[in-house]
Image (cartoon, protein in one colour):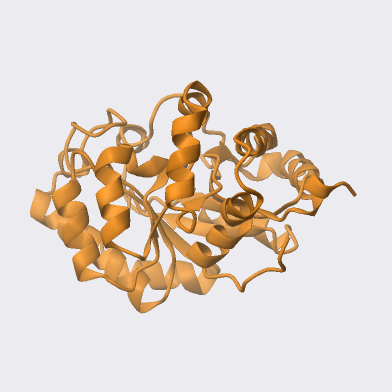
Length: 290
Ligand SMILES: [Zn+2]
């Protein structure tokens, strides 16, 4: 084994988007990733309790090929993949379409085997993903929407579950701070450097329980590697490895591994990004030193 293969890698940000018919393909991909040093993948699985396919599609960005269960309820398939993965997959329930008894539903997903929560802050159509707002699509008020998001955070904090939450620190910084002030013990990852690094820096400096990841940032990082290397070295205990890969796209995870190596970070910082920070965000036991 060469030196690179000794490094444990944990991807905190993948999406399922795959159904049972792809089980063999997925298993082959996981084998490939395991031999590249990947030990765990946190995978987001959608749940849909009551909405039409048409409405759900309004809440999913374009450019991701959804090959999962046709009504966007991926929980069963993802848990099946998890059971067959020999501990590699870490399933997280995607709450963007959650409606009804939020704590009760989350409790049932955790009882079934989910170990974390994914959310997406879509208060209006001014979000960075250019998606419709949840209040508009589901016909609820902004106050009702915020109540739901606060219930999700309260559940996560009370049950010590990690939350991966897509939110733009630049546009929604006030709401972000209100959330973080209310849930100081929550382990939360605002992915993609909180969308805007300038606004997000202030958040990282003020809240020690906040993480971020590099998912979906490949073109930006490649265009400006020095500036991203500096940012990661400024917050070496907060930035996690993540890829935004779909479960049937191991090659994207491998591209992101190469991307991190191409930054030539100090060895201990690289180890933090690949392993130490993902473990502390997800709440996994500390791993062996590299
Ligand atoms: Zn994502």
